[in-house]
Length: 222
Image (cartoon, rainbow, N blue to C red):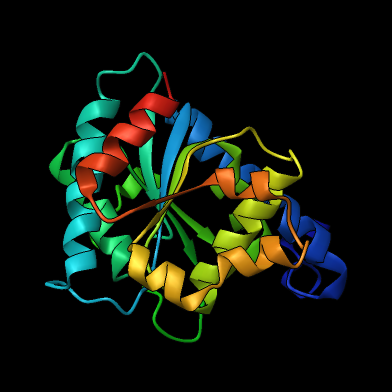
């Protein structure tokens, strides 16, 4: 039997590098085949329901960003983790704007199922979190982070670490929901204790307003 037909090998420990490379290259092929140049990434909780103020804000923002993106010379996609909650709101807004709606979906034991607003040709399934995060940052022209739990914080601090260490191009990063973000994280303590530089806080823009977030992203992408 040829090795690539041997499922025991492919799905076993020795086949892990093959699975990793396949997941990387399959994602790359989908993005390039659909001619996606840049993404606007929206992170946030899968548990926030339709009708919540943050769900509505994510929906409205994605719609407005999708409308703006269509005026740009490069092809933008609104990109989320492809699941429910804030992710669903972002993809729904993109669909309503008739803009590319990209979902980087992940296998999880609960919560995660692909929302119906991800374009079928732009639904990318991941097993490995690190590859998913690579693609979130690889094409991003902006990142907007709504309130969320452990997964959202993982994505946020991964993004900040990459920006701080210049492992990715500097892009606007918005924390939407000032009260939540400033209550749940003591940002000033990082600076006061010398754990980050004062200038590192310049990577973050706090906002509570869709129009403010939109204008900030547009300005930073001129």
